Length: 57
Image 1 (cartoon, rainbow, N blue to C red):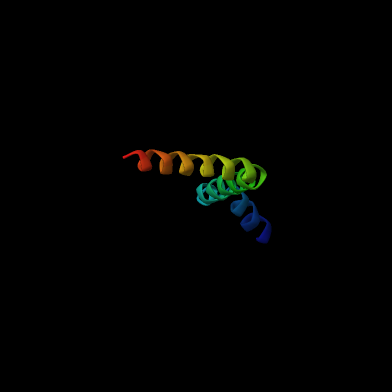
Image 2 (cartoon, helix red, strand yellow; image 1 turned 135 degrees about the vertical axis):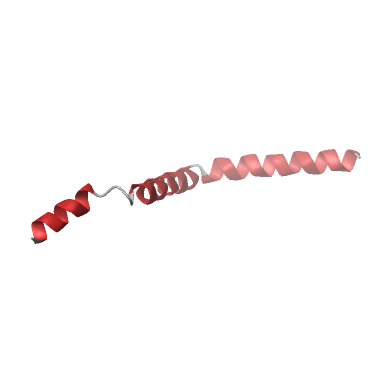
């Protein structure tokens, strides 16, 4: 009886959406950690350009 319940659990597909979302979040977090320095440089550069443009106004 327990084996059938375990087999039904493995074949269940309702939780697949949640697993997919968690995997996507894990991949995004890993990318942010890997490219943190580049992301910080780009954001800093963008804010510097925004500041320069607003000073011209």
